[in-house]
Length: 254
Image (cartoon, rainbow, N blue to C red; front, top):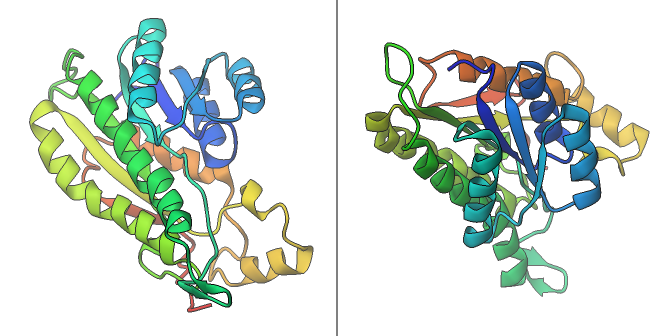
C-alpha cells in the first residue's frame, strides 16, 4: 500500500505511539486524521502534522462511525487505520480491599478491546467503497496495537492482558474475513515503550525496566513503533500476523 496521498486514521493520536505514528505517516505524505479524547493535545498534534483532529471516545460505536465519516469527508476513504488508543491498569484480581470491581475490569476491556474493534469494523466498512489499487487489488490496511502482556501477563495485569489478548485473537479471523475485499489486518505487540505512562516513574525504576530488556537495554522509542507501522503498510505480504516489538523481552511474573 502506498502511503503518499493516502488517507489515514490514527486513534490515540494525541500522545505516545499514536502521535509518533501520525507524525511519520504525515511526513510520508499521508493525509492523517487523529482521534483522541484530549482536545488540547489533539489540536496541537493536528497542527504540527497538518492533519485533522477529531475528539472521539472509541468505546462509543456511534461516535467512532461519525469520526470515520468526518475524516472521509475531509480526506477521502481512509486506506490506513492504526489503533493506538488504550489504557494500562495495574490491579490484582483479588485486592486487599476485596475482589477487583467489575467496572474497573470492564473499563480496560471497553477501551483496549471493544474500542479497537469499533474502529477496525468501521474503518473496514468504509474501505469497501475504495477502489482496489495495484495488481493485487488492495483496498486498505488496519493495524491494531496489542502488547507482550497478551502472552506474558504479569501479576496485576489481569484486565490489561485480557484486553490485549483479545486484540491478538482478533487478528487472524479479521484478516481472513477481510481478505476477499483486499483489506489486510495486522497487530503489533510492543514491549516496554517510553510513553507518557512511564513519566511518573522514578529514574531508578525506569532504569530497572530498561535493564530487563535483553537487547537493546532500553525502553523502545515510540518512533520505532511508528517505523514498523510504515513498513507493515508498505509490505503487502504482512497480513494476519502479530509482530512483537520488544528487544527479546519476556515478562516475568512480577
